[in-house]
Image 1: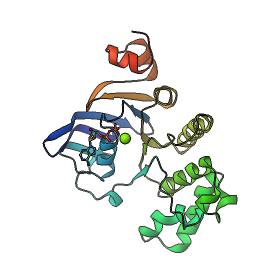
Image 2 (image 1 turned 180 degrees about the vertical axis):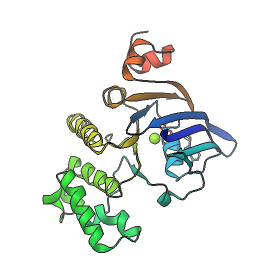
Image 3 (image 1 turned 180 degrees about the horizontal axis):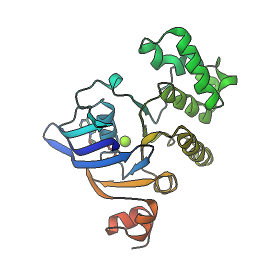
Image 4 (image 1 turned 135 degrees about the vertical axis):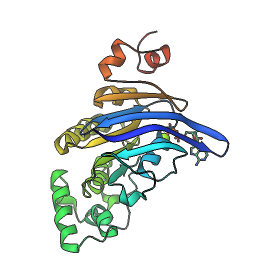
Length: 238
Ligand code: ADP
Ligand code: MG
């Protein structure tokens, strides 16, 4: 059974359809990377899975249960954004605990789970700092902490590394991949960076103009790109 099933999902803004029927099955524990040029509809698709955007047609299901009508907080999905969206006036501890406090979790339980998340991410020495006193990589880790603290069924990432410089991006790529492998979580990861997609993904989804061109392992795409768009996009001569 697919952990996250996206079935024939469409999205229109007014009269303009930007997603034309997109289907992706993400297996339990699988890391799927959605890649495509800017404006092709990646963020819109993620936002629909997260419940931040209404689905025009089609269905999203988690563990077999349709979630189209569930509010974001009831979806058991964590989303990590490009700009981290950390609260500047809160400490690392408060930032990580925020989703639990919002959900009404008891303070002792919040404290316990924040400690555990911080431990997993090597953030324990930084728990009382504010975001402005952290490096880019540390902020990224706090954003991850805020996502894992809820122990979600699935993670969504919207270009989480695109604000980092090249060296840090390469390091975080490896770190993030290892962390997700350790946690064994299902993830849908959006990027416009082909290298990120080909090095991190169990499977890659290549999208163009609101349509999926190909889904496959990185090796599938190298060996058998279905068309010149896919071949060019992943950097093969065509
Ligand atoms: P990507 O994340 O791949 O860069 P987006 O999902 O942000 O692409 O956008 C896909 C298309 O939908 C773009 O043409 C964009 O202009 C349009 N779009 C996104 N959000 C809205 C909105 N709230 N209202 C109208 N059009 C939108
Ligand atoms: Mg986007």
